[in-house]
Image (cartoon, rainbow, N blue to C red; front, side, top):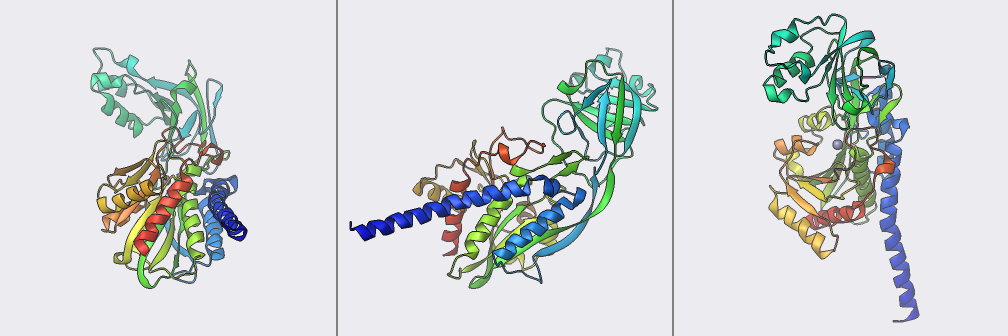
Length: 424
Ligand SMILES: [Zn+2]
């Protein structure tokens, strides 16, 4: 091997190592940015998702992605329940921390004041118990704490639960007791009473009085999907998609960063967009990059898109949905992989030949993310999701700092190679 050749090998290696590590650096930077407080959890309060959309559209622009219209935005709107301001609860003088000790039921209405507590738990269930025992009590201007632990043994669990969950007793508010961490969500309606969920370990031993100040607001929320593309030789598309929205804010102080869910999938889509716009050879199939909003409210962005597609859905060769991509400690789920054995076999083979050491698991379609509305319209889809039960889900601790990015680079390589094989 001569000296000059060695020199070029070293330069080549340096460039390729830089390119790979740069991908991870880029992705990390995106996740850090998107999960930072300035995007307010990419939800409905303070236009968090709108700010994220503007930021992402600007990234699309720097990549010089083409757009189907005059810009990348596909506007639509929906009604959603929000918590823009007060979120305070204390029981017998103990202040509870929002997001950690308690959360609002996402459909909670307004509630403020100090109330006597009526506790409904298994101690009420004596052998002579009937539902009438509960209904006869006075709930006027009272706050109910409902602990269903132990109710399962006497056949009344569902009856009692529904009675209070929907507040047929007309109490001022309802607080449901749960074990473990509290997973927040989104609803498109709200109740006319306060509805909270509290962690069992956060409840004081005595529960006689509760002071609550919860403000909810049902709003018409204007939002956008973002779509860009790289033109290929034919108008058939390989689609990369991810949802960029998350749960937003719950009260003034608490926001849900959604670093894993789904700043990480958004970052990988951006990573692919950045890479594929930098290629000099025109690909055979075109590439589309779709970032959906409204996922956490019920796949609203992807549902809107499939009803209002920017090119015929029949022109999608395959759609790859990326949701929660920053771990992989327990493996990588490939949803709908079991329905597409040929595609899964390609992934499996790349994984082995390229020594990527990914623990790939072929799964059923799953209704849990944005590929599903496409799947229902008979589009060929694969949904990638890194598995890690230890990561917080829909909690304020889903932060950039908590993400291990265990398999990010190898999963990126797997999908990239799969796309190359599909396209050439
Ligand atoms: Zn998600």
